[in-house]
Image 1 (cartoon, rainbow, N blue to C red):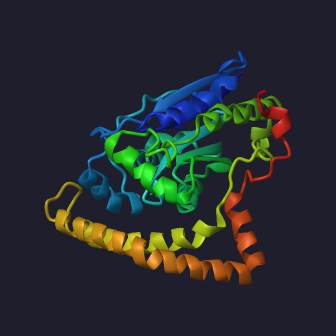
Image 2: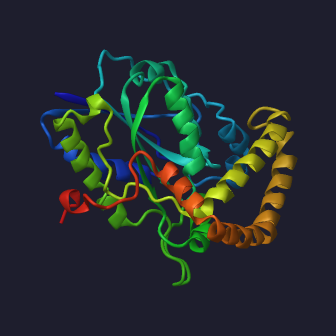
Image 3: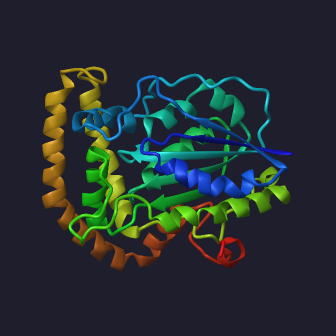
Length: 316
């Protein structure tokens, strides 16, 4: 009997659908036992968000300051594999997942264990995953796979549809031009291929050697256009986040004026500086194609973006 621990936090419920699809082949196997812990913050985060509540999470998110979560019941299980599913907040893991990764339970159960991360987000996730890698490494966990599903539509479309969904709860298509918000239903359905591959990996004891189980399944695809934007954005978030944190704790009235100022600054940067930077970065990518490709491949580890095994595990 193989024991698989799934840990997740889904604010909108979409990530729950991803996990249900991914884990369905595992749940159907009588030789695999799944224990699913859904992380519950002591103070629930609203969905849809109010704008100020959303922005007020920004400093703690980027500095990985954990929120308070309900304690997970202790158990005597020795898990063979851990699947960690999370959303991205401000180029960082969501606060409830950060809180889990810093908990005593995580430090006990994930130590020396293989971990598969599953991300559901708009389109920028690389810096968040780099932070998760550090947290996993600090507790001695072994990342063997990373699976990323992103919202449907190009970056311009999701710049409209994703915030609209988060702030209003409306994810329907807009004006016949913009697609529905969120991950395409077919992508969620096809996430079952990872479950089939994980099941095969467990049958082969791949987890004992910390081998990737989801390689060759288009598990990740790093968009080269966003790498530098994420790096620059993270530095900006750290500067402003430090300033806002020093004004008081989350919910403090002293933070609100600066949060509003930062929001105006951010919109100004997006409208003016970002387009110019995109042109500059495009030119740099053309000059340094090999370096950019190496960086892309590095961030896609350990699962990679190849599709050589799709025919073996994609359900018809």
